Length: 248
Image (cartoon, rainbow, N blue to C red; front, side, top):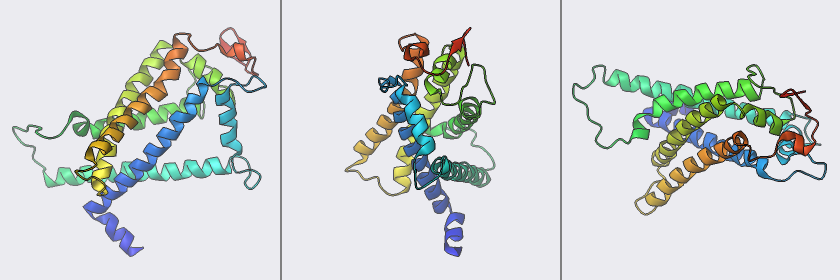
């Protein structure tokens, strides 16, 4: 344990923690995006949207070995720990950098740093704020500008993204996710020593591809819902009955 604490106390250790937790969170985002794309799939034999079926699976996965929600909460706790370590460690590194250079350069020019690199701390803060709002809206229902009904994922998404300002908010936030992921993934490869002149082009391509996939994957369904390209929830005949524009 003392070795772990000592390693984390070093700058290299902190950067490694940021890299590993960042890649863990990236893996989750990719899987989450794939799950959201189930909104494009046809309904099951009972007429239930496939994304609703998937959401139900998440609550019962692990059965009969595990009770309902246990596996899901285990994943949530792991992700929460990874996110906390990521945010806290990045903050520690930023504080170290400020202490190392308490007086800013009079004429400072960014020679090699790209725009995503210079904005990492800013985009990270925006993403954290977005994550909190997203969870309060679609997970806890604390923020409810539109109806949220447990189990009715397709309907919840559809009515939320009928609001232009919600769609615009998500476009802006997910653009920040793309910038953050592009530079973050590439930096993680460098920190962990995975980069190499022979494969750097492929690694950069992966970072760019992952960022593009997440932005397009997360925004495609909401955008098409807003423009009424996707089916209205009533077309599925699901249990989420709509009355006066509100789900019941």
